[in-house]
Length: 417
Image (cartoon, rainbow, N blue to C red):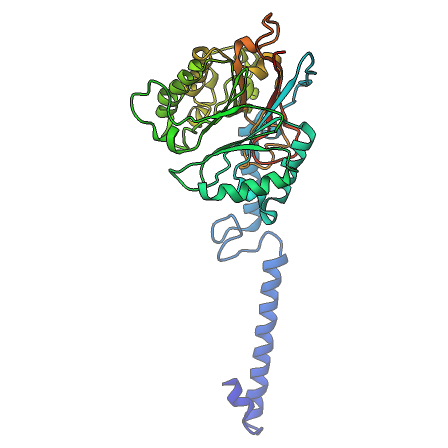
């Protein structure tokens, strides 16, 4: 109507209508601006039909602010200072000085979970990861390098191996890759050996005395064994029990028992390295450090008693009481020792895995120790048998440049003269 009126020839009759319409339009504009001003900047008496954010429709902004403040106060009372501190508290790491290997020829072994070797070798995806791996090899100069969870398919090995050896300056000559044939891009263990170390790879596709064929052992590429003159090195990536613990029974009743029989049957001292997917001691689980009786838990093997106030941990793969008890049985059945704990029994805050679900886990040193070097008990220092190899050192390289969510672990072994 306004448009029609404005296009009408101005007459004595049409002029008042035009003026009236213009005045109405100006009044409406002023009211809109005033309402907008009140919505954005008005004091707390302003009311919105939809309600201020966080409040019911029609609630005054001041009331919503009061409700939010009360909610924050309630949350702070509920959490308390202890819970707030717990969320951000970093765990101190005890010193674990390296030991000098002397008195014979040393063989250094490193193991690291790379969580996908193809990605690490791709400059567009893993340039930093490859640089970290190269730095590790140049700094530590391992004689044998073991890789867990490389995730290579059998058809990927040749190209990936060539890239890897080139990146590592041709330091390694002999290699063996075990790949999963049951599932693509899954599992996998590899071993790289310098030309100065001599030995023979052993095929491991079944455990002794197994009641039936085990497809996980045979088809998932989880073990590489290398026999030297004086000991056998076994690199392994132990099956995870699964997010819903669907493989827990298999892990503790079949894999652990079969693996311990395999290791016990070897006719030489044995060294086991890799991601063993279990945190054995209370010291190996960051959550335990917040318990008031943490020191008492460290020497206790009553694993069920560790979970008071931490019941959710019982459902986490690698942290269940059954897995931890099964690991203790494996050590006993195969006469093995956790070599890092043999040298550093009371060291706190030493972890080899940091979940990437929380960005502050690694900066706050809140992790798990899932990666190990195990060895025959008679390889520990202090024996009088010069015909056997001796364990000279065991270490966790948690300060090394980040390759993946796991840190390298390793050991030094003195060969018999």
